[in-house]
Length: 120
Image (cartoon, rainbow, N blue to C red; front, side, top):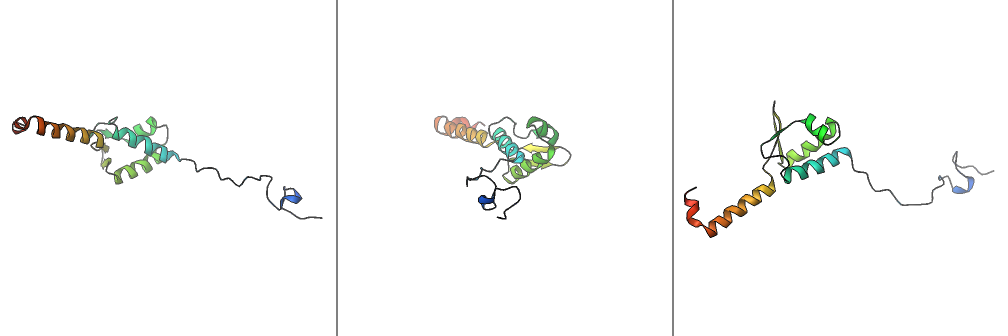
């Protein structure tokens, strides 16, 4: 009589009936999904620079609870895309795209209308 793992066929060597050695790709956590979407929204101007955002609103918007939102906003604070202001919530930082647009306009004005900048 062969002895194997309970519930396994005796000739399987103690392994369950699977023969595939492929590992499933890691699933994205809800915190990661909230982080990715919120980051995208901040960068693309969905939230205006300086706009106050609270956890409840973010949790509802991204279909999660406040815990994954907190994890996401902590990462975004480290990237300087959000800033925590006590009793107000989180403030959206200036988006890199809007900063780039402003810089582009300023550089264009410098070369096209240098005298106009003296009046600003």
